[in-house]
Image (cartoon, rainbow, N blue to C red):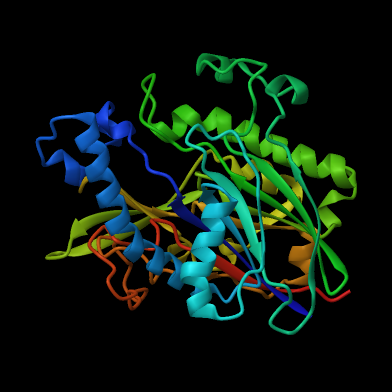
Length: 371
């Protein structure tokens, strides 16, 4: 009995318009920045037209990427609400995969923009085993103080002890696959942001992600018992906005690109994998071929890294010791630089940097769920 599990940051799957760019240039789309817009009313009219025109191509590519995972269950990040998810699944994904993802769940987390984690599930696996929802538990309300996780480093960032830990949520979803229990923890950790206090964006925001990872681990240990949790069947799925390695890119397309694997001294992922608590199964792939995200701030700052994770509990990883995840990169924009031998055929209409399925790549793995 097998289950195909996937995770994907679909990026801004929204059913509302964002007009904040009129007053905040950082949020203004570059297309509108080309024009002399005279009023807020004119800006709103143009932004609606731009967003609608761009969204169709984007969501076709997003749906193609999800379809390529062949997932029975897909964990998602940056979903506006359940209505947006329903409209996307019916209007785009259903037309590609036929039998749809009839079960859809999300909840309101803590994101200031209102984009949350979500999960879509088929009624049964490809092998015909029923997928049954049991319950869903949000942990969005948990504070640093409640878990004893407030640190001087967090205080230096301006975080108060009574603030909520998760920037979105840790959404706990209990299901059964052919009667076999499985618990999913859906997460989307704090983004890296801009440099501050003399540190780059990743270093500056690291204390928040470490606290989020510590909180996820505590939630799991309290649920199953600290001595037994690692041997239960669960998976942590989502965008953790952090990496243990990156592939630095130098050179250009004329003289050739050069790639160098660099290990990071610190990562929030280490909090979760410490002591064999769980396994980052993407690390079963070759070092150069683990990336799910291309980062660039120009020719002097380019790298490939893993931001998207399926972390399997020690027990589930041991049961699936030979399973190697797939990374779906066909929805990447053309600007993404692929190491030699990793090139893929892009989905139709993918652009230089947009439209695209997402800057993130879906990750999928087939799991043995036999009793």
